[in-house]
Image (tube, rainbow, N blue to C red; front, side, top):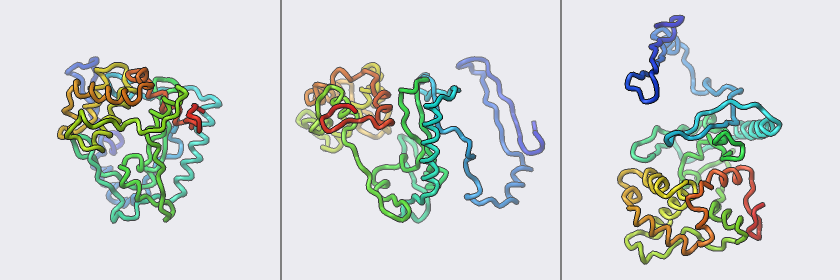
Length: 293
């Protein structure tokens, strides 16, 4: 079907969850519309996000590991305040020149998991932030997403300039672990992810620390051990050593972690991560005595 000579539409169908007969509706620009765009000679700067796009997002529960769908909600004084504050922040970002000065072209090629991801565009359209809450609960998650600088590694981030001035990234080591210590009234004075290497010969120190950190944070986010271990391995590309670690080896890593951090045992497989994300998002971290503020 052709609508107004500019859009081609091929309707799909839906028979039920998982039905083989389900088809996807396809929409594409018609040849006439493609020709109009060719003649228009748009520049990249002529295409941008519309001002009224929602930036405070509420999502429902994940289903089969997929991100929850966005749900409608009724605004309150709290959501209106969050939206106004975030809009002011986005306006500040839009009025600032954020760039990586060493790039010849404003793109970064990324490698995500087992396949190469599309190049990341360093552009003002990718400098707009949204705040996302989960499980239809305003006290779950609440983190900020959308900035292109959130999608690059720390090496690239160290090269960011704002209005032609270099920047410094403050790194909070072991933040979630430190927050859990603080909730127990204990000040964390050590690196929680550094464990003895005697049982893990063949693992370089930095690799071992990274594996322990990822495993621990995954365990804090998970509801049970099997789902935590599965999610841990799924987070690595096929050639990475983390993909091949057995449950027994992961058990040993967690045992070594808990030997160093016994106060955190009750928080593993507790589904606490999403609550910690919210506390970070509202700036409730910890004070000088290790107490949660």
